[in-house]
Length: 115
Image 1 (spheres, rainbow, N blue to C red):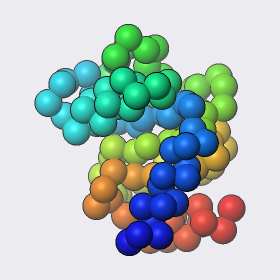
Image 2 (image 1 turned 135 degrees about the horizontal axis):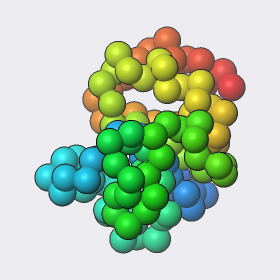
Image 3 (image 1 turned 60 degrees about the horizontal axis):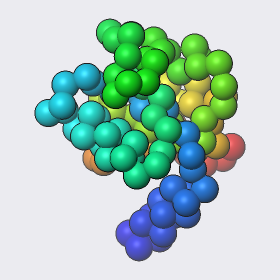
């Protein structure tokens, strides 16, 4: 576990732009709370959710592949069964990808690590 925490710290130190898949505009949702916290600590947040035009005063993109620039990290707030469809897009636009705590899809995790 300490290795995972150290890896996360290393990634976040090298990160400036974070795409947040499934970011909600509702303040009580975990995705909103996490993104707002990151934004308040100097990270640029790129919301990804087809339901919104804007979240946290940032333009919202319907899909990862619609983002016209590279991001450092893709943070996914989706159900584990939705992760496989996102991994290829995350790999295409970012250095790292992670799912919300407790959301694991082992097959795609292995694919991402092989990259």
